[in-house]
Length: 406
Image 1 (tube, one colour):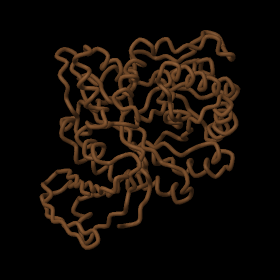
Image 2 (cartoon, rainbow, N blue to C red; image 1 turned 180 degrees about the horizontal axis):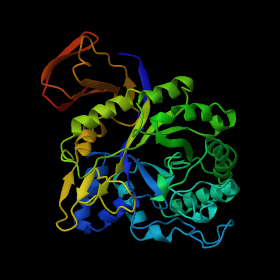
Image 3 (cartoon, rainbow, N blue to C red; image 1 turned 30 degrees about the vertical axis):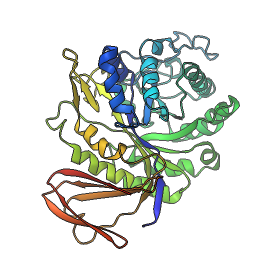
Image 4 (tube, rainbow, N blue to C red; image 1 turned 90 degrees about the vertical axis):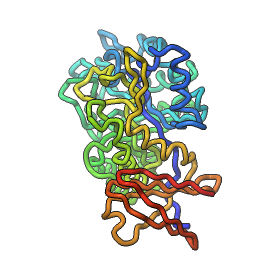
């Protein structure tokens, strides 16, 4: 057996407020099989899912938990009542289907009164708001836990370096601000509240790997955080290896990326996604979490400027469920690779990688092995070697193959 690498936490998707809305519009009888298929351990087994602290761009409206017209540093107007209608019930259903679900949460914007532009749309963080904002995180964690939805990790900000030109809830965080807030405000507030919620930094693109290295180079930040959250929109996944090599004790988590419902290959681009997932997992990520788990046939609810689709699409009129290519790619991983599995190095001889075949290997806690092969090219035969064992496999063109054995 090749040397083992990182331990897998799991696979999942963002349960945005928008996703919860389209799921909530199904009747109980319609929704039950959908939730089971997505989350149950003997089905797709999605088990590392993301929630939004307030609204993202995929929401029914822009909101936070303290939308006061005046500064409210004591958070007297804090309330999660908006989420009680359908968001929290859907999250409870998901965790009921998979009690081992790991939930992490990200804000797209702090309350408007914490920002100089006094708006949820775009803008930047005000340093004077750090204390109240740390308490805001704690109140969110406590309120969600009281509703039966404990949160296991938080990121400081979704996409710390993207203001989105004021077109959607967003907030810029300077590198020094994120470092100071995480180490001097958020981590101490979480500890003081008696919680063990993890903190993940960055929550943004591979191209910002230098920022991640700089942040972890500060001893107080290194002590405060569990690892780095990554998006794959800009740059290459090898950036995660650069950060891992500098700080091997810190974890990497892939926290956002999804299909466009308007693309003609929305239902069939599974090989593209599996190839991407292999690259992510071969560069030390412990989890892969897709963007919206569910949206409607137009990629809505959407209050932002981007065009996205869900892992599944739920048609407003017919309630028909359509699976994306990303869904089918996920099935090759989430159904076979269990929490606690270790990635092991897989090497290709000859021109296999050059021929468009990517591959990742895993050893499950029950000692079973899994290899996922994504073939972006023409049909080709391959041979797997493990110790004295060999296996010949014919890979169809544009295909994903999962081999699982004991």
